Length: 210
Image (tube, rainbow, N blue to C red; front, side, top):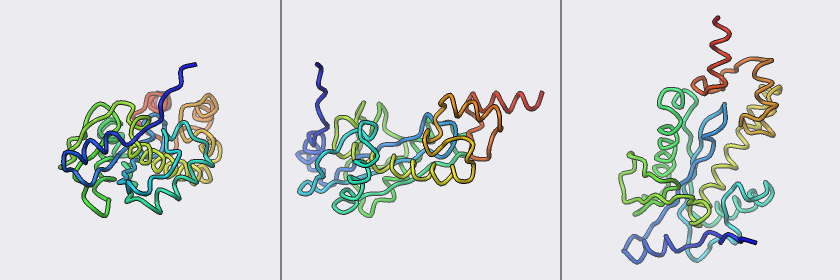
């Protein structure tokens, strides 16, 4: 069986050796859903108080994520930020996700010396030293922590939105294009919190005009 290694602190330690003291990890969640904002987390871990079990948020149960969120908030510098549905439709999801990342880093109470970014590119809006790490949430503890905060925040927001629009099942699918969500979209139509630039939503809006 191929056992994939857990994220570690090696990227952070390499930055520390270069004299970069405060190293933040940043990650976003919510690029794929048809509705709601895209959300980013930024975390500067305390090397002496790193919660055990940090990993890519998608690999953790909701209960374990909630436990880790409490530990991260207790021992790390952290921030969460969003890019709105309107910004997603105006900028496109790629640029909106980078905007959310920049906002999360900017919201930290201390300015990091270096940022580890999940993905293959550094957002142009980051003014400090930064490096992209492909699959960073599975490789860097700081990025993993950021992914956990972002997912917890966005999932909670989608549960709240599900109370306003109960037909779409967002408390279960978080806005992703599951068969039940797509069926509800066809039956009940597009809500104000759907991303109009996304193809399944755009197609329904076009059908309504013809």
